[in-house]
Length: 438
Image 1 (cartoon, helix red, strand yellow):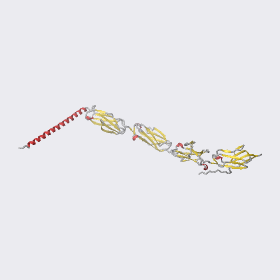
Image 2 (tube, one colour):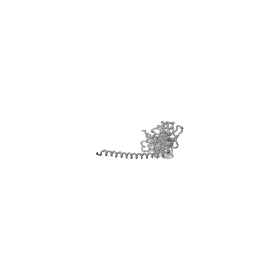
Image 3 (cartoon, one colour):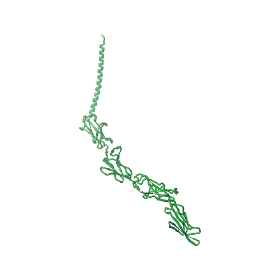
Image 4 (cartoon, helix red, strand yellow):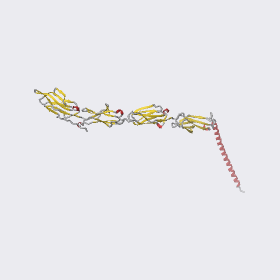
């Protein structure tokens, strides 16, 4: 705790010599009004009076009057006395008072600025404190405080709190700081010594590039997010994204964040390739590793072609069904249909189309289609109609043959029943003749 110097009065508050008295207040604090009165003895009339401080003339008056200091400051401390010229009856004389020592006491100490850290890490908080103490006899007086950086007031300005909390310090906040404290009545203001605060910037380290896509696959026409992030680094960070093939910058963002995103709203096939990002906060740019992006293309609607050995195939001919999607990432699975009934499937591991051979029967006439699917949605071809020569006649002959076969079967069954009936009755009659008595 600071020691307070008390008023030391080496002479009494009223000092008298040769009948002249200097009246002064018993104690003085900063901001108080000091009134000095040079008082004569009885029957002696003052004509002129002069006040002195530390042996130097302050003021001369042609008639009796007080000397006052409206608001005392520490430099008003000193040794005071007065001289006066006066008359008693017919005699004029000059008299000098004794010295009165006045010491102006501090109302409060000069403030000192302290900080939770004078070298804070960028982005971190700092608490500033304006430390001072009122004189014990003046403890009821209210103080208010204000903090400054490079002549600019901080926060909301003057406040009754001796603390200022700064949530985040940035590189540009480095500079000269001080605080001021003041009383309102009387108005005494004091400033702390200036202190330097240097905000420490952490360099960029460990830059990585990631891709974020719905479903985990980069699909043509879909959205792609390129996420650039740093493990460490403070302040304004400049993020930029680049293509390996061209080296051109795809975009740039400046923000106080450890991550930044670049959005590609509609991916094209030409967007496939290597990408990297860089991050820089003023030390040096740091580059991420290259990330290769594969753009998958949904299969287009396939084209079905039927190749036959003749213009009008007949039963027994072998035809080739070929299905091919002109665009689409491999592998592609193809499925063949006849009247929406699956005939079989085949895969094209490297893309392109596949073929399916079919030996024709009369039932193979009708509508054919195929389907292409590479996991990004199935696409169906247009319908192709296959007509087989004689297929209708063969069907008619087959129907007649089947009908006749059924009829002959019924007749054969009926004849068998009739023969069995006659045979069984014949056996029965012979048995009766054998048993007639003789």
